[in-house]
Length: 209
Image (cartoon, rainbow, N blue to C red; front, side, top):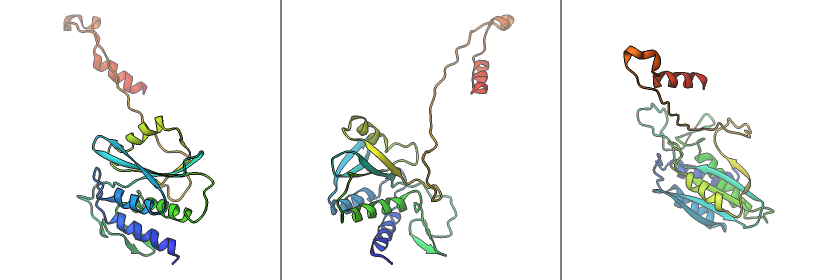
């Protein structure tokens, strides 16, 4: 097994063994910072409410190449696991454990790529953005969005390691939140045709959507 592969697996084992169920980090961020500091990366902590996320960089010029991911996982309570959830287990050529694909496996690969990049001069700066508290409400990444709006250098390209069944995906499903207020017109039941029920407006609005 090549050295870089074994070190990647070792990091994946360490990350998956940490019960970083959202919104907890379980020490994943300090672990990653330590690995990246050893190969010349500097770090910026971004705070959003009680969540601290990590932006690591090597190089300060443009254009910037970025790996992005998160280390929190969804809960396992009430689920039937045939393998230990928080232990990386190899079986039939596959790796099992909470977060192997979403997305501690990718995080381990990204850090391994950063360590390997240390051995050669970079033509473009390499940045890594790792958040947690993402799985429920995407809370963690908000501090990164705020930071990027003010940053002098923004990523020209970013690889996000969300699961895609190993196919390259150039987009991701989005989300939009809307608030609609339907205002009716009150009236006595004897004069119902002159009134307007706000519920009827709401039903029409939903049907139009």
